[in-house]
Length: 87
Image 1 (cartoon, helix red, strand yellow):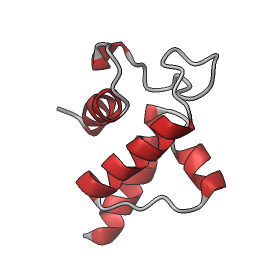
Image 2 (spheres, one colour):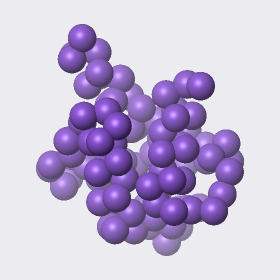
Image 3 (cartoon, one colour):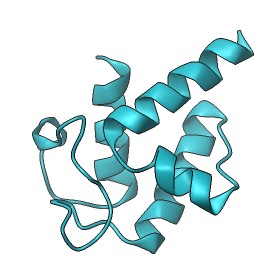
Image 4 (spheres, one colour):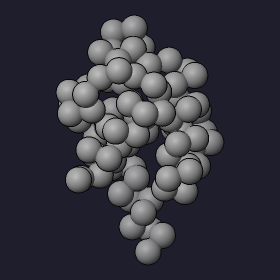
């Protein structure tokens, strides 16, 4: 399982969505009414807490968090950088 696949599963679980994680594309917008999953601010909080618990990454700056959580691809890229810096 790749990091992106793992993150897709995490999004579905943390945000309590009833969909196949494989149906989420790497570059689709995750938040807002035009997004296929239509995630909202509560989902962002739940997802950021799940990321912190699983990977140790704390998302504290709201503008930065919005950018990082914009898509699976953006989240994976940020997380890969974070994890590489910890090694």
